Image (cartoon, rainbow, N blue to C red):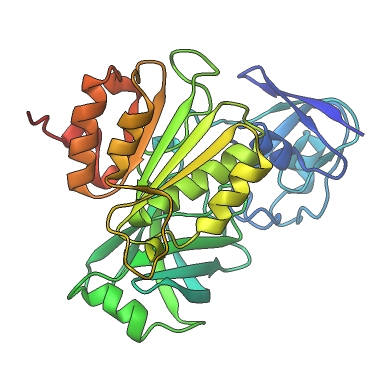
Length: 346
């Protein structure tokens, strides 16, 4: 049975489905309530039930004191509604409000997705979770104090495993380590989330404004996070995905993107290969990925554009998209090549 949940003081409303916790209902509706462990052991999601009845679930007495229970407080990661509710809790309104954490992770799984791309899936301790927005990134903290930034390819609702897409860079110390030495069960220290490259579910212009996503190479990782979040949220805005790679091997999750387009009427997928090899048997689009967008859209003024790729691609795309009518306020770039830091070149 579904129950209505009103969140105070924001006035936001969401509905819980059978067996869904208050936290799950809020997150599924797109409201950012704080959390950490999601299993009742940390207390980060603590709030007050102002009206209605709940099943408090497995909240531990050491985390939720008897006096707090009597005062109507609950751990929303454990509490399930038994009636319509009004709750009182904090909500995040911007990425910077989500707490940045340092966490120790272990490699759960890793596999070569392309000759130069390794997919690495990280697992946190059972009592730890990382709250993030679709499209954000984390830093891997190295023993010598250096950092390496990688976008999260998993959607926020699927936070038990954190997936990274790591391209091997020529002479790269860390990426060489990933391909040659990193093994399942090895530990990696991460810090995050970071970045203003995240999915805006409603446009500043109009709620149903079309979305265009352009990924170059492993820029597909944050696009994957955003698309899977949009699917989970049942977002009905039109989403057109352009993924560019040098050769067909570079489209290392091609079948997944094809499945998105086949299963969801509002999603289109257009792969583009710039230098197809003789053995690729490539019959799709060729050339530069941002040029494919220009070929398809005579006017970009009515779209929101998300762009993640090399600096060269991003500079060229920004310049040409603005000339094609795209307002700069509707262009969102990966944090490693933020649109606000780029120089418009003629």
